[in-house]
Image (cartoon, rainbow, N blue to C red):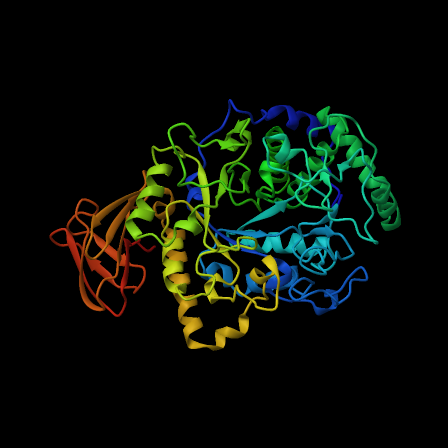
Length: 556
């Protein structure tokens, strides 16, 4: 594939049998790290342009409708921000980039206007980086530089569909895809065995029948001088695993090669509910094995020995929407599926953005109850307030940007920052149609404004506090006082935290009884002050309305 590995076939075969399949009978608790993680999500094309020379590749043109073409952002731009410490300053634990593999080359003129695959969800070749985004070497460099700064990289995986058919991008063989019918959402089959929209060919992931490779891939690999290598790797994969050469197994092989070659530690899985759940269990098994192989070859580079991580996009799944009969299943109408039983450690929480307008205690306590001894006890969710395709994102007009930051970054569960949340990037671009409104270029120029720098500093303080204290997202929530609103988060084996909101500027008293003993030295991570607990409370004098308390860490 992108980089030849040196492991012999015998070692690969031994490793494949050393890891059990992930199934409904085997699912461990999601680590506290991922239940508290701060994930930064970006469309690379919209984030930062590090190399203007690759702005238009494959003959693409600058003729798209507003915000529906490539704008120049790339992997080099992300690397530049990594090197500048931008993500570390935000307390980011993981970067999630929309798919970077090669996209369809042409544009579609359907629906909302002339559109190119700038977003990354219209794949053409799963084995190569799209040249608009950069090169395989730059992806490897990005992952290595992120890892050296303690940041994981989550690759976005698309197995449900290919890109649309255009003049430059022919339909894959019908043994690989179904071009119709469009999903009608009636039951499991009406959600899975169908195309999401017109001209988005659905991959036949249900099939176990061997198929030949698409001729357009063979011709492309031949032209690029890597046909023999790709075929040899496929032969080795199918010989090792015993899987039939059905479409889904090709895609699993190609997806997990990024793990084996570059040490990717996790996937964000696109359109999860539109693929048979059993496919995801296979993906998790093979990705886990690939990561183990990479770590065996690169013991000095690994961050830790944690298991491979997968977070899924099950559209409509909500961590606050649980009843006695539903549990954590997704109900298709004629079948219920618990995706946590098929390899997922976490699911995106589509509920949070819709409930973020609730009062603090109702929002926090409800999620904490579900995540601690409730339906989601021991597993992860990924909360967000804004995203690339949620037209009902919270505070799209950016009138409550500071409140949004505080609610998200102090929420139980893991959190996703959508690129530009921290700078109040505009999400309602009048000239753009549909979800393109949510995908404007990163507003770096706004950092010239004092109010934007102040907002960014607020995000940075919250992010660094969350990163330093896993109890914030993974711990159990308990209200201490209504006025000023004060709560604690506790997690076994980790330092507890106490947070107070809407406290007066200047002198203030915060109750910490039953959390910290008298005499304990605490640090306010928002102001930087150090205080001592006396009579079950601490007294501070700061110019802020927020207090973030945790034990002062010993130096040396």
